[in-house]
Amino acid sequence: MKAICAACDDKFVPHFATTMMSVAISNPGVKTYLVSDGISPENLAKLSAFSSRIAVDLEIIDASQLDLSGLKTRKNYSRAVWIRVFLPQLLPASLETVLHLDADVLVLKDVAPLFEFEMGAHPIAAVPEDDTPRTRERKATLGIDEADPYINPGVMLMNLSAWRERELSTRVRDYALANAEKLFLLDMCAINAVMAHEAAILERTYNFFPHVHSSDRIDPRIVHYAGPKPWNKRHVACGYLYHHFRAMTPWPEKPVSFSLADFRETARYHIKNWRRSLLNQLGAKKYAHSAQNYRNARINNSRFRRLIL
Image 1 (cartoon, rainbow, N blue to C red):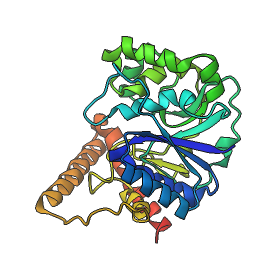
Image 2 (cartoon, helix red, strand yellow; image 1 turned 180 degrees about the vertical axis):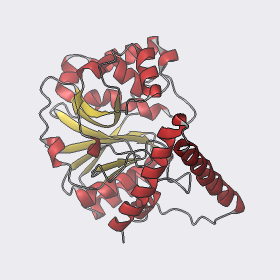
Image 3 (cartoon, helix red, strand yellow; image 1 turned 30 degrees about the vertical axis):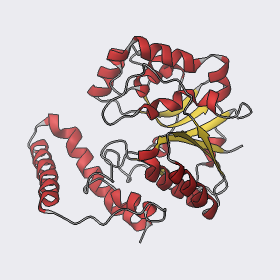
């Protein structure tokens, strides 16, 4: 069975609904699971009605009894981020494979090849983070071998059978409790520490960061707002795609007036990146990565806009 799953709390419901809308358009007929961490009755009812209206087979699973005590959280990361670690025990026992999606992704094209991906003994299949000094530093902190990937689990094909047989949820939890000081990115770090060496690799098209990668080299199937969030900032790369799908949900965004503060923030963003791009052209190599990212974001803004015109 083709199935996807996400998890969120009440605050993130509008973003999950936006993801679900994109799935309904690009991949109709896919079974969808949502694990609820304290979603209000009002939002649960709205989700149920919305899924029926857009012909999505949505099943909501309550995670209120899941013991997440002791697991590290941060200001912008609620306990809900840990739920994906426990999907094997929350989802139906008959389900052997599921595509986990963060609630800050948009599925733009058919992802049928993922459901046909041969997992073998691999517990997960995901796209690695780019090989940057920061990634290498995190791998070293977690004791991950240089040759192994550091994967981004925001889009993660999960071999639920392997997780259950090898008690991987327990292993990830135990690592997280014993190594909280190493978990800069919380569950992402814990998942990598336990099983990065066993991960199967997916193509970047399935986890495309519009603020980093360039669509002139990659044809994105899944866009992941892994950096700045389009509901928080105006100048997020390809943010208009998010707003396009969000407008189709029962959670329309409030009209935002363009204040002087917004103008200043946007101006600072562009001036900073123009300066870095210029310094890079003049030979300052330390700005090469940020200059390339800024160029890629502008390319993506131009190309993706055609999808909604």
